[in-house]
Length: 504
Picture 1 (tube, one colour):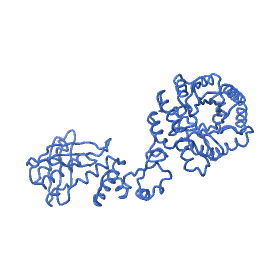
Picture 2: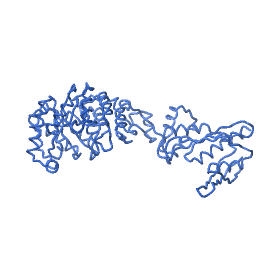
Picture 3: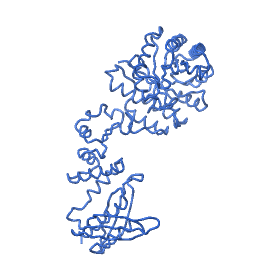
Picture 4: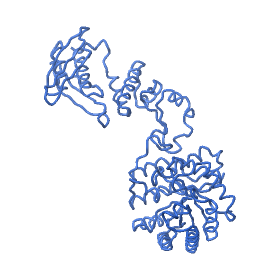
C-alpha cells in the first residue's frame, strides 16, 4: 500500500473560516490533538501575518515532536525569514511558500507578468532551501493556470530546492476528472518530478474538495492537505475525516493508506468544533450527528439484524456508535431496542402506545430527544388500567387572553356518562382544574402542582406532576406528559382523581 501523508491546515487555512476564532491557547490544544490523531504535517500558521500567529507557530514547534511543523510564507524574503525564525524549535520544520500562477491572479491581484511570477517563485524557493531542507511550493490557483506555464514553474522550483509541490485548487473550480488529469500530467511531464511529493489542496466552493483530493491520490498524489470538519476560506477545504475514511473504507480501490489514528477522529472533530465556534452540520459525513443514526423503520430493522446492511463503516472505529433515532418513521423493533437500553421492559400494548406517542410528537416538534422518550415511556407505564379510569377526558376548549378572564369548557366521561362543565380561573390551567373539580362525584383537593419542560425550546414536552387528596388525608400523585401545558395539566389532574376515586 502507498502511504498518503496528511497535511493538516486547520490552524492556518481553517482559522480563516468566516466566523471561526481560535486563540493562541486553543491552537496549542488543537495541535497536541492533531499529533495524537496521527497527522504527518501540521501547518501551524502564517508567522508574518501577526505577532499572535508567530507566537503560536513558535510554541507549537517547541511542543510537537512526532509531526512535522509547517509555516506559511509568501514568495518574499522577509516572510520566509520570519517563518524560519518561528520554526527554530521544530524537530521537523517545513517552510511552505506560494505564488500565484493563474493569469487572472497575476494580472488583477499581483499586477505582474508570468516571467515575474516565475522569477519570484524560484528565488523564494532557493532562499528558503538555503535555510531549511524541507520546502513545499504551492502554485496558487493552479487549476486555472495555463498548463505549460504551470509545468514550467513546477520544474524550475524543484530545481531551486522544492521537495513537495502542492497543486492548489484555490477557488474550488476543478472537477475530479480534470483535477486527476492535471496531477497525472505533472507526474508524467515534469522531467525532474521523480522523488518529489505531489500534494493536493482543494477548496470546497462547488462541494468537490474531497472528491478532487481523492482524484489526485488516484493519479499519483502522495500528500493531501485538509482541515478538521472541512474548515477554511469560504466553503472550506477538504475534510480530513472524509479523506481518511475514504482511504480506509476503500483501501483496496486506492491501494493507499494513511497514518491517521481513526479512533481519534470524532474526538478531534468535537474539539475543533467547540474551540472554533463552528458547529458541525447534522448530516455531515463521518462526524455529523446523523452520520450513524437511523430513523427509518426499514433501516432500523436491517441494522438490528446486521449493522452492515446500512453501515459501511463501523462507527466504533472513529469513536462513535450506532444510534437508533425514534421518530415518525420508526417501528416497534427499534422502539423496543431503544427502550430496553433505557431500562423499560414494556408489554406489547405499552410498546404500541409509546411508539404511537413518539410518532405523534415527532410530527409536531420534528426532533424527539432521549429525555422525551424516557418521559413518554414513564408516563405510559404509570397509566391506570381502563377499568380503574372512572373519569376520562373527552374534549377540552380554552379561552384566554390579556383582556378576558380565562375560561375552560370541558367534556368528561364519568362512569360511562358524558358530562360537560365550564370553569373560570386565574389562568387556563386554573380554569381547567376548576371545571373538572366542579363535576367530579366527590370532593377532590389539589395539594400540589409542579411543571417542568423535558427539553429546551418552545416545542418542549411539558411534564406535569400533581398531588391530590380526597379528604381522607391520603395524598395521590400523578404525572402526565404532553407538548401542550394545559393538556398535560388536565391529564395529570384526571389521573390523580382516578387514583383517588379508585382507592376510595
